[in-house]
Length: 138
Image (cartoon, rainbow, N blue to C red; front, side):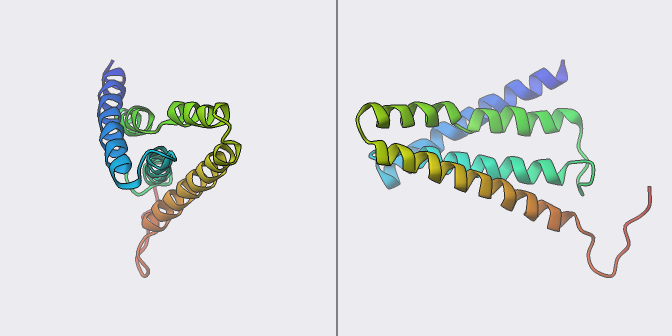
């Protein structure tokens, strides 16, 4: 039951963060191209890649299952915007902006996969013990 509550709370907070970041991105970058959605998906991809690696079985930070569910399922699920991405891409195609739709797909995929990799690599580097120290054997 605690895991369900953690996911619900994380989803609510992630949704609020998405809404705020979307408004901010639109005010900075405009509405003509879905840069806000791309930015949100890239940041969310980084967060899930970083947190999954940091708190995984080989990670430096051991957390309860409910905490992982809160961040990875709840917050990241509420924050990232794949459904918005899909709708915006469809609308670009429907309005005849095929090049923009293709660019949205390619930019989003490349940047989000890259963000997951950077998040993973960052947490993996953080997980390594400092040079000269030993990791205790379990």
